[in-house]
Image (cartoon, rainbow, N blue to C red; front, side, top):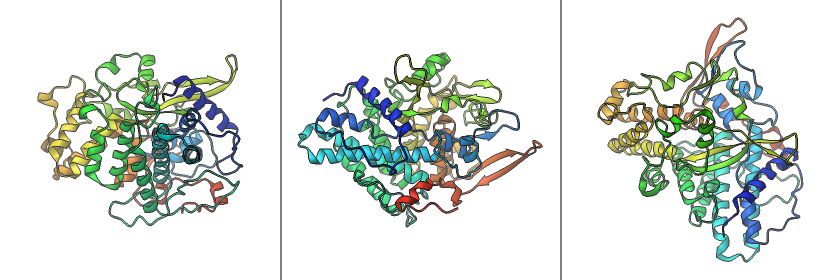
Length: 490
């Protein structure tokens, strides 16, 4: 059965509106008035099993993809300045960790309701793709939660620190106690759901597959998941499965060609369109992120150098668009803010963006890193060259192609494997600027984050956030204590 895209979008936006007036997750008795007793209702329900808030504000602000531009430059916005200072944000403002936590558990609740409905009804084989999607969506939401709100998974470690509550049943009580389990147990449950769900997925169940976990999108998720776990061959296998015949060159973002020729309006529409091959999974998210084009802490004049000459091993600039509101306030302009009005002539409504959750570009870079970890440096470098051929202006294979030796020299790292991995991480840093991916690499690789800070006299100091610091774990909402969920140490 194919799901009508217009109905899907309407339902997703309606869910966004409803969420604005709802209390926090677990604060109210669930509404069970609608019985999910048809495949059509089931398919509509599963469309809401994705977080409808973004993580862009707090992950970008906390990472080294943000800088303090100085007193009087840009706007001081608490939802940005607080995570930039690695302090706990109090409240559930748009873009806050609390808003994302709530959105994830609301998505999980939708997935659980769908799975329970499948168990109670005799839907037959027609329900299998939606069951698969619900399982993978549930795994994804928990995966993002455990990485943001618990200590990072340590490869070959005990991982016995607290994880996040893994919820597998619909809510039946106003207040229900939950156990955080451990990071290890959370990861195991994620893997169980992911494997079971992927076996059932069907990419033809929807009119617009890019808004759902298709086999390709789920493979990209699996590649990211196993990258955290350090199971390198699985990363290679799943990343390769994200594009037809493993052809990344024809399926990643054409930064230095097609996208570069677009004007700003056409560019940000194209960047998140569902008909673009590089987008594997898009989510409708209530967000004001694209409005924040002049924050005091954010994309500034030092970060813009990442796209210039001599930053990368080719010595050439990349083709990324560098847009500025007023220097030094820059934006990648990757998101087109859309607006849903409650009625055609309503003066207010819901601002939202289409946010790429998985792309072929990330899958390629994840595969390159896995190849390097497996000692297959030639394959890793080949992936790097594929990526750079679509980024570097006037790219020439004869003069611009990487080799392990060239990367070793460029980064002054005698260990060629480490030089290749550093290249991949630095490449992802500039490529996924304002997409939240950098923070995942920071926690996964134990990278130190350095932030600059200006005092009232405009004197600059530098502060570091090193591996093992408790502030690298975002704080769980205070209200979660009502359900017996302990907060993270500070």
